[in-house]
Length: 247
Image (cartoon, rainbow, N blue to C red; front, side, top):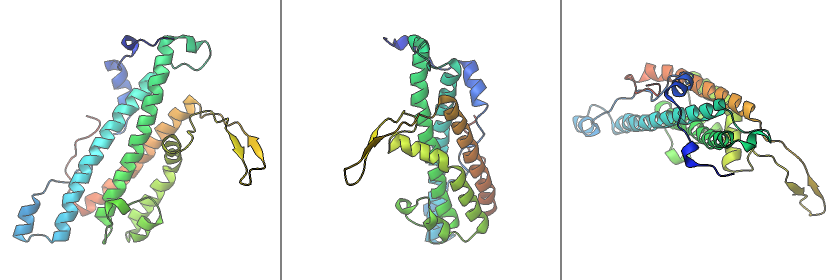
């Protein structure tokens, strides 16, 4: 089958609005831009304090971009799914449905990337905002090392909850990025370490309806993480109204 480029269609205005309205309103947290040289020369804040708030502002810009891109890929994923994707032998004879499937697959994996990337950028912000001796960005990873450094029990609880709630979506994304994807039928053979036993198994790919359900749940859990943390950040830092992904 030849897939003609003219049959790849962007979402219509109506399709875009219908799906985008299901995406929660979030973006950057709203850290203010500072003139770091002015603060340093004026002695208003210590070098460490200036470094902290200056870096928080720039990480916040990164977060806003990640969430904006997350929203775009999310909308494209669901629009193509809602249009109808090829799943049966008969449907694979339809050029339109095959194109929708290709687009769905591409945007679904892209959405997984941006969802987990946004989660990881939020962890960088937690590192700077709530850890007294914050780590280098290259040492900030999900796990007990970051959690153990947080003294604020509320923040620690938010972080643990987010880690648990987003674990399944993180595992799915990692399988697509680093391992044999869970979105592909797995009929590989296996062999024992001593090389004497050979076997094979069949693991069906996660079906498309479940992928959409997992995606929606992942977005909801990211939003809960974002909103709970924003409330705590607002108690410690003056936050402006950020540029929202819902705009």
